[in-house]
Image (cartoon, rainbow, N blue to C red; front, side, top):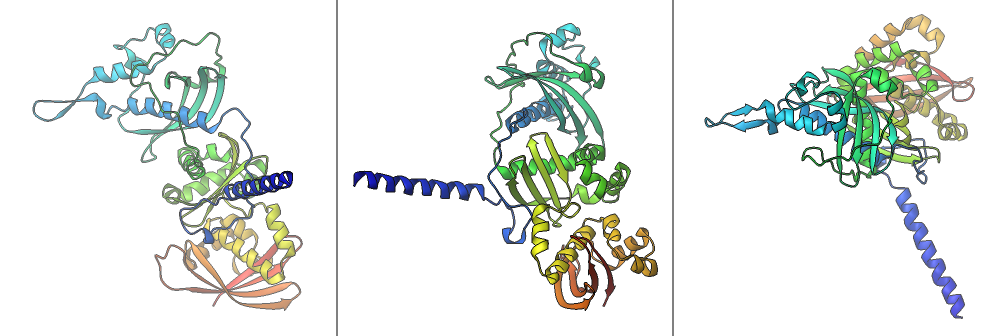
Length: 436
């Protein structure tokens, strides 16, 4: 009897543990209403990141270099002393001493750098700069770890941009660091060929070990890195897209660069509002929606090893295909219309023009430029969609009346349209439209 009771109690405990685990793994991260945010991927148990650069490494490295960059700013308040008349006076010697304290001692000695001549080697800034890493290589991982870091500096107005390169040394136990600023040529060939020096605590070369493990904050970091690097140079984020995605979505890097230029003001002002986290066992996927319901999808293998895509319509997911294949034709038409307006809201005129029926284009909208003019003049920039009347026209062709309103709520009124759509093989379709 005691043995049976023991087994029953054990089973109850196991069931409770499983329920707690499942609830934790199905957590949906949000800032606004979670009911309004859906995505094609199912949430599953998170995969462990098993490559070398972990989130803790990434955030610590970024913090150390950002601290160095902040101290290069001539306007940093620590370099100013209060005068008798109440004014603040910049003291160059303080900045020289501070920056010198962050440099690797062997590097300074080998290059005959002193506090007096440091500005001959190190350039200071006249305005605040932000840093984001593009690539990090581990040279040594021990009590004193060494990293080779390639990144970008950019001012807060997204005007001045500069590529930067560092060798960074971190003492994880003491939470101190020093570094070597290098150029691109040294970066490409640099190897660690001697034992690392013990790092001395010199007040300003301390850092905090990142405890950033909140999924929402990690998703936000990817989102902000995407915006920062895209505005610095679109080539950085174009190279973060899978070859299949970027070829189908943009065709060439020139098209992507033009897309960013055309929507530059929008990218400066995007704000993350909703988050979704999932995993397929090979990577962790962070899905972020901005205030205009546009997607930013990050498939992460380790902190800097990830792919980014800007929509969930360019390449159909398995989940979308499964749902589509089991749907009734009316639902298929709705899914395709929703796709079309995702394209419009993304200002993706290349893809949205490509799904228009050829005879409709030849008769009404002969070029993509003509289509773009119609969209910009007749539709809202960001459209909220609702369906009204549906009709089967035969021959796999359907009509749907829809209503559009301004997603941003800055403009009043509604736009009534009729979509004529012919379903083709698989998930393909062609359509035409008219304004009512």
